[in-house]
Image (cartoon, rainbow, N blue to C red; front, side, top):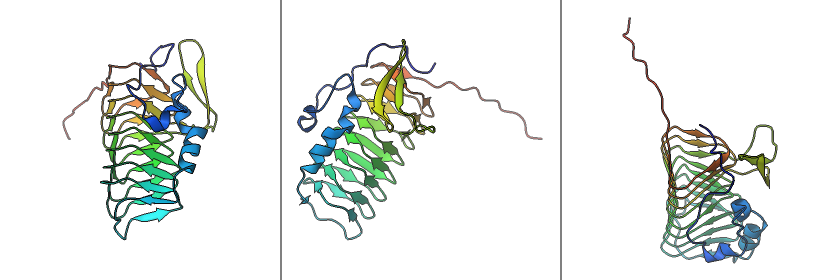
Length: 231
């Protein structure tokens, strides 16, 4: 089974961070990645870094805000504009670019790339992840190697299949929108235009096609193994 034959968006977020509420459209949750995000980031001070940084942390551009209690490990690359809240962990080799909003208590792991994304408080992309043009709700956890792909090979607008026709997003780049508490197993790939309801779990190794996937579900992968005797 691929996209669920749904006609409405699944339940996604219990609570909207106040900074984002002014430009959130519940019928188009990818609105969080639009002009409102640009406006929010443009209002950041030129330098609002409340912690000491290791000399090997590389900052690019301006309008970089990092809250108290956050820990940025050596070798991270952070490009502004970007908001990083309090008590965030950015681990070695992480690359953050394209205009990001990272809420309190989030984790961006080693060799993880975050591009034009919104992470609600306590969202985690902790191990070898790519998060492109995506929204992660509170307590989302991406398994190691999970990829949120954001661009179609033909460069066309990302649309989301539904039971009757498709839902236009108006975006050529759109990854996934994951509701609060959604979990992915290791090495999942979510194709452009995936919307997953809150508390849904996705088995390791799943390739999830564009579509709407309901809340409080388990998305399973079944495979058959063949074991033969060596000659």
